[in-house]
Amino acid sequence: MAARIALADVTVGNELPSLSMTFTREDLVAYAHASGDMNPIHREEEFAKSVGLPDVIAHGMLTMGRAIKVVTDWVADPTAVIDYTVRMTRPVVVPAGAGVVVEFGGKVAAINDDGTVRVDLSATFDGQTVLGQARATVRLA
Amino acid sequence: MSMNREMIGHQYPASDSLLVTEAVIRDFALAIGDDNPIYVDQTVAQSFGHATVCAPPTFPIVVTMAAMEKSFHDPALNMDFTRVVHSDQRFEYVRPIAVGDELVVTTVVEDIKALGNNDIATFRTEVSSLGELVVTGWSKLVVRGDE
Image 1 (cartoon, each protein chain N blue to C red):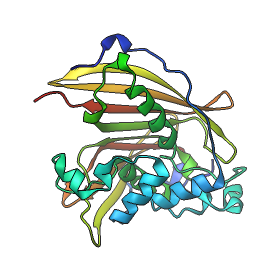
Image 2 (image 1 turned 90 degrees about the vertical axis):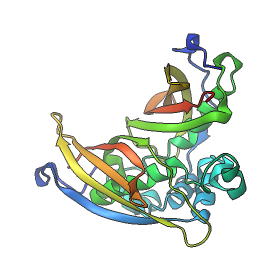
Image 3 (image 1 turned 90 degrees about the horizontal axis):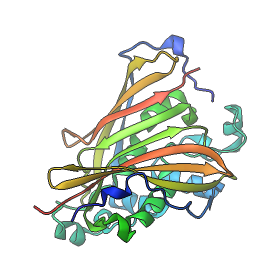
Image 4 (image 1 turned 180 degrees about the vertical axis):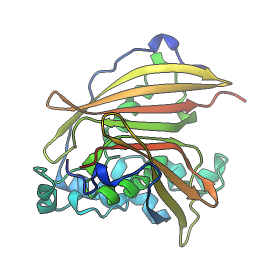
């Protein structure tokens, strides 16, 4: 593992560069095929509404997969991430058309005794957080 | 209908194996919108000290979800899989997943508890390649009970 960021260069409270990512219906179809999660609530509007959802929703795991890009872009080597956990608190609702934008952020929350770093992540859609307790443990250079 | 607590600690037989190829990794990276070259370019991966391209951090879900879904259908578990919501996910990585790995998953029912009318089930998924542990996943699932 060879992170581009050195432990000596980070301080608790440091903000990682944030990211905006668009979620479209096409993205959800592509993720369904790549992940094998073919649940129709992520692809079929009528079905999603029939089970009480406002519209098609993104896979929680797609949101988790995108949120960690804040960290992996920062360290350059994604294998520096040694632990990653999220709670999926709210769905990202994806209407047909141009899609919706989710804002992702990250902050150095702690430097652990073993020299790893805890990064707390945020994901915001439509003014509300969609991931809770989202944390990555990262081994820096 | 609530889940069978006697299944806590039960371990399911190992899943079929998935051979990790460059194409599988590339397709997953594309699908999550991550353009990091380490997922597609062996030269870049090697510059970071890896033998081959590596998989994105959430890639293990491809095998862990499939393995868990098989257990959802076990009548002994008494789990209404039509009412399942995936609420939490954690991965603890031992080493990167890379091209050539043959991933096999062992699923364990780690915990089942009640929260109101719902059951909260935690499944532990141990992903190994050729007998060596690569990553452990924990998935928490909410099974919505009757209103």
